[in-house]
Length: 209
Ligand SMILES: C[S@@+](CC[C@H](N)C(=O)[O-])C[C@H]1O[C@@H](n2cnc3c(N)ncnc32)[C@H](O)[C@@H]1O
Image 1: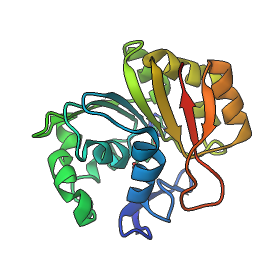
Image 2: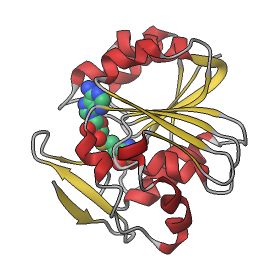
Image 3: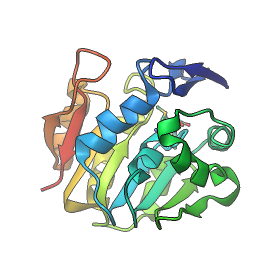
């Protein structure tokens, strides 16, 4: 796996099979904060689903200045989780990463602010079924692109994610493809434009009412 420095100084990975970077090259950490954490708003004690955990930027960014978060990450590739161990990160997020460096070994870690990240390793299309219904306040939805992984963006998967969310819960994702927004609506979500970060087109926010 190849690590690539993005324009905000944080590193992303390049996946050879998908032929895609894990983040926008305009900034991996910027993407985590602007398209996910700040776009949705996170409060202490929230339950968060990180659907496609990767290097963990979205979850680890969420722990900054928060306490008592319960985060569950779904990921099928232990190699990318192992890469967190030695990942060089900007100073602004160093203490938060320091707490979660050993995730590949422990799979569940609680930091000093009582934020817990628990990983479930396996195909997210299946492991999602293990999660409790009406549980999550926030979902960071971050698979590879709809072109590369259409199966991750189906109405059926959005329906499963919807069922796991509390009413009032919000989901963020970087894609604004028309057909994925149609699938979100079929699942019951209200769909809004998310922020424009690093490119002209908006991200997407989906709300369960
Ligand atoms: C765009 S990257 C996610 C980036 C990640 N959120 C981060 O901050 O590094 C997509 C991730 O989805 C994972 N993935 C792909 N297919 C999956 C599947 N079927 N089940 C679980 N994880 C999957 C990949 O291994 C990769 O880590």
